[in-house]
Length: 409
Ligand code: HAM
Image 1 (cartoon, protein in one colour):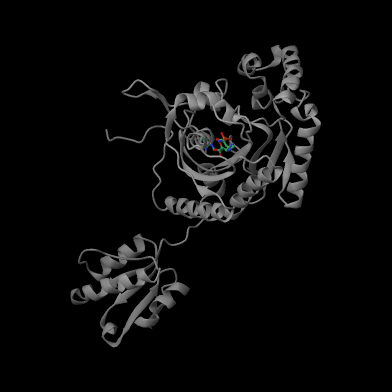
Image 2 (cartoon, rainbow, N blue to C red):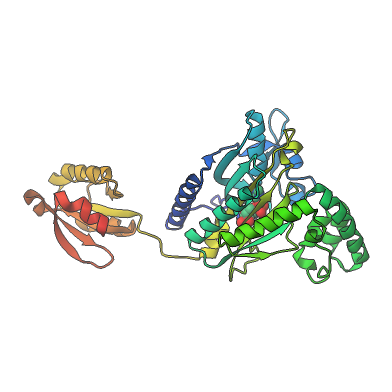
């Protein structure tokens, strides 16, 4: 039997990969405009980075990590997310002050695979490190909203909540635990087992939604300072005209958050995993990793899920032109033409070997070129024939006007 890719992973080939290329470029352009610099951290980290950063009692650390011992006996883990690694890199690099970093790359979680839930998946993220102002939270929320909207998702709504600071949460968790213990018998086994280890996570258990309707929520237990921060966040979202919904039960699956948490949900997207991205504030993460106090906020979007939500849209042709040559004697000039069109910024290709005109046209069609440029007898009078493949329309074009003409096709 031939070998297959591991379960929950994907090969991204054309034509699907054309959508990926467009969306990866869109991301790089957008975050650069917002002043985020590229940050690249290892795909594997010491397991402790995630155990301490993401939290021992989270589903990600408990059940989903790809952890292995290397030949030196170190426990390493394929990154299930990037926030902990980026903060680790900031601390290790001896940085101070504000740092705005953006990344794009594969993450790994051992999950039950389904559409939009993969074992290797791609995140696009930003981390705004060293800034406590609510404007930083607003900016990262805006980056994710702009990106999903520019990518083509309609009616994305940002679900927002505040889970307070640790002192708010300590008071809240006591009230929540009392409530959960009282309804213990009605909870699913999974939720019931979490009361002692991570009661906050019980709150957004989808399986227990009905019995949790009357559960106390974090926003009822905010201090005046965290309340003011949340109110300023909501006012800022209004000002920036970012559509949001209050999500009092949203707590997110990673332990490092405080205050702001949010997720992006496109309207009408009802796959089991509805959030195409999420994030929040994590003022305490640096200290968990042995660094200084470092108020920070960030977000990550799931590219696989964005693509599922977008559906199979028509992609742009990957080539502006495919050069076809009618006589072997003109192959050298045809390749020169390919070179000069590429120099002028066009996406151009041709068949490498000597083939019939028919075979070259077949190749042009297979490659989904927008147009074929025929180097034939007209060449001697300085012209080529351009055939637009979508319409079949043919025109004779002077070689010196060819690049301009193809740009308009
Ligand atoms: P997260 O919510 O765990 O947050 O992941 C962010 C996004 O990654 C999700 O909304 C989803 O779109 C995508 N995602 C997660 N797991 C999978 C999967 N198995 N298959 C496909 N897509 C998936 C974080 O990872 C945080 N680091 C976000 C953050 C950055 N918070 C602050 N800064």
